[in-house]
Length: 105
Image 1 (cartoon, rainbow, N blue to C red):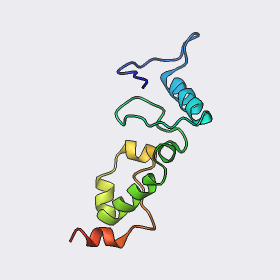
Image 2 (image 1 turned 30 degrees about the vertical axis):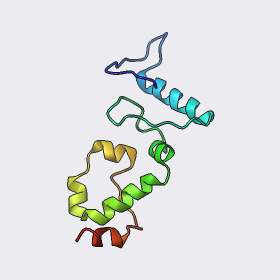
Image 3 (image 1 turned 120 degrees about the vertical axis):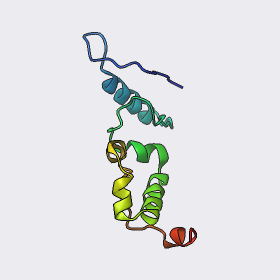
């Protein structure tokens, strides 16, 4: 576990920025086949390409499918924010399981 709570810093001659540090940490973990997840409320390089898919695999697509099945397009827009956009979980899926919404009726 690596914990960097509440500390935000800018790049200096001796230290990379928090975003650069986060990115290099994620790259090192991936290159060494070390599975990891990040706490949703922590500072990190959330725009790291494919981060959510790497952490959660096909469960990221299951999220999009459930979101699509449960929310109308209008409701999906209402329950979207910059963070969901940034990590790619505000989108919809073309393969939303119809049985999911039917089970809720």
